Length: 390
Image 1: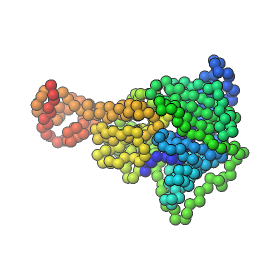
Image 2: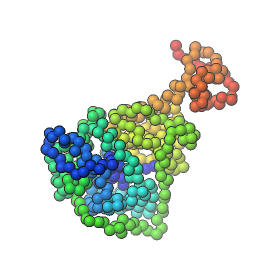
Image 3: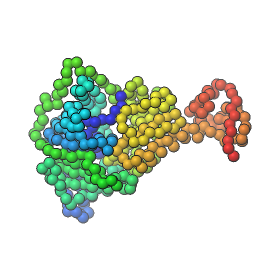
Image 4: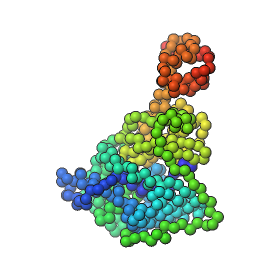
């Protein structure tokens, strides 16, 4: 089952920004210093790396990182030095009581109203593999240290403004606790104004959080559902056969995005290809599946859905519509290349044997163009009438 992860709070962002930051603690120089830029990124990277290792108990408000127009969700949060995380939804009423425990490997969510427990792979598990994302973020954003030091939940914070070098992407403000390297607030600035994505209302940093605080107490009759972990794959012929279509992955993407990793995801008896994208600070996913066999696709909010050559594509990510459309257009063009490579230019109303028409492209036959374009196998002799407009 592929679903929107309500419990992936700021740690979605942490995973996207995680870096193997080993910079020593450096105080920020005054605004305008030639050393400011390098030090700002060092402090930012260190906070993104250390954030999930700081024992704390806090009340946070946040929006869904995937569906930015969602209402603010109020959560009580507890975290240990070992990286265990517990989230309990306080509001809205429709989600009240939903509790998640994430130890960095396994993510367990208890929904008391449904009397159901869902066991999944932690979305933070791959965060250790994203050390190059800070370098990517530096290519796509200018990090500015703002002179103000806001007071958030009684804590003084650095304020970093990440200005996107691609005008289509909004600016983002990150407020980081000056003493604890803890991310306290995230804001997104676009043409509609400033939108708070994460805000800390109260926070305490105990020496340690007791292990028993991370226990769940479900009812004995609670139903347990376990979902298979996404598998990072190579886009080879074997995956193509397993999915029932050729994956569509463009070589070049606009707006500074790159392909982070392709993953095979299973849910409801179906298989999907999840292409993870990032620009260093923002993550998104393009899901692909066989539209001829499976019509519904993965569950969750979507900004854009298209179909090309029998492949269904769905975009999920917190980006402007112009960006999601531009990224999807690249994927659609890649899907259509399979058809274009199978076509041959002939005179109007010329009758050809399929072998004569298509054998000029040996690679086309290898990729099954006869079957995909005409519904024939190479062993089926037939005449094809191809009409081409002059």
